[in-house]
Amino acid sequence: MNCQKVQENFWEYQHTQLAADLMLQTSHHLRTCPSCASEFESYKQVDIELDRLGEIEPSPYFDQKLNAKLDGLEKQHTWLGGVVFWLKDRYALSFVLLLITTVSVWVGFRHQQARKLNSMEEVLKVQDRYLNNSGKSTGQTVSPPLITENPSSAPDNSTDLESASNEEEAIPDEDLAVVENYELLQNYDFLKKFDFADPQGETRPKVNSN
Image (cartoon, rainbow, N blue to C red):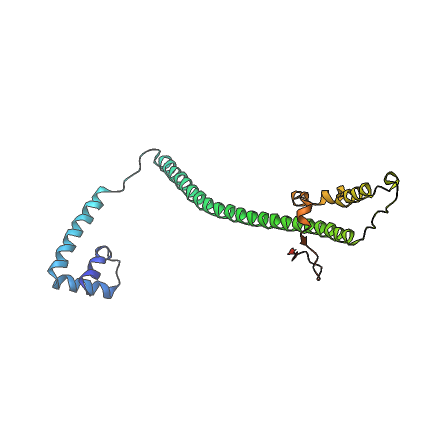
């Protein structure tokens, strides 16, 4: 048995709480080890003084004071735990809000892009419709005015041409309501230079060679 083990068993050895074989080994070690023997003598003096003091009785209301202090410690720990829990929740809430904001911005951007595409498709459809009508109307032949001896009796074809041109340029209100970017249709003479009719039915601008 080593010195550390013997010194750990001083109380049991002093009060004969060890087994018989351990009691014999401890006694043999104390006889052969001066250091442990000196430590055991000091321990016996302290133990004797403690026995003389007797049992210490608590002061009046000791239990109540002790319980009050314990309640204060529990409340303090609860408050600190709430702060730590709130900090953790704050980071989690910030992450959730950031995720929701990102998704909302992405959805709004996609919706705006889809609206722009739909608007441009409607504009191109109306442009294609009126440019095709313009091509058909310009392809018609206009008969020259008849020459008569009396110029005053000749039919006034200029008025008819002007009215036909005005009818050609007029755009119905229902089509204007569909097109959001009406500025693209205001300069109709400029739009006549483009051909929006595609063989596949698509509306892609192509500049005429003329």
